[in-house]
Image (cartoon, rainbow, N blue to C red; front, side, top):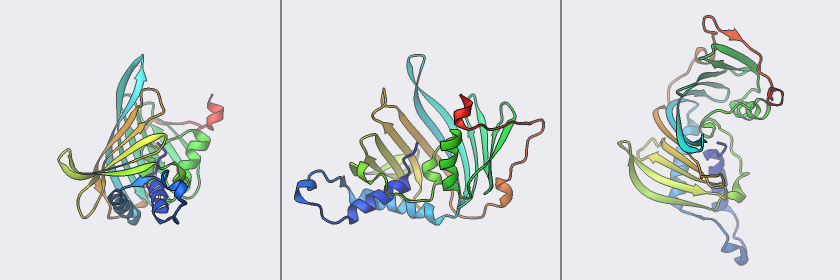
Length: 252
């Protein structure tokens, strides 16, 4: 899931601040509701200002298994200290994995097999997310919430943005916004209060067979306070074995 909401924010801001286009291009210009942009700006500012934060999330993701379209589930607990710390736990019915990034190395723990491996990585979290995926095929759930960099590379892809008003998500008053590209439809439900946070996120992959969806429900947001170095330091569990983490090309 690479659609980073901060990247999208940069793209949308660029669209609204762009110089007037020629009349021939005006009809093709994206239509973006200013209120949707305002809500997105508010939640992005909140996360950007938080140098340390944590959250929990329940993820539901469509998959086709044995000819059936089913929804798989997993949970995520994440602790982030920008620019160079991450600790994450990802659990599903069959898997349980932990990740520790301490500014110099990334350690992965398979709790079911009690196996762990450590790799040298760059010196910022944003670079780690890219390097881990590109070199080792390691992806982190909800990367769009973890990153801090801005990039307008998706600017040409944005086709529109909409504001759908106030709704309630599992008892929490929220506002519902959505954006679209040729590839995905992307929705956010943001808490309707003075400290906006993401309560729900849904991505629909329009070009894939069966148009699968990815949905995350967020809870336990903490956007203030301190996270010590010890939070991000890995200690091997009793009886665990260290293994080598091979580059993706070597794993085939």
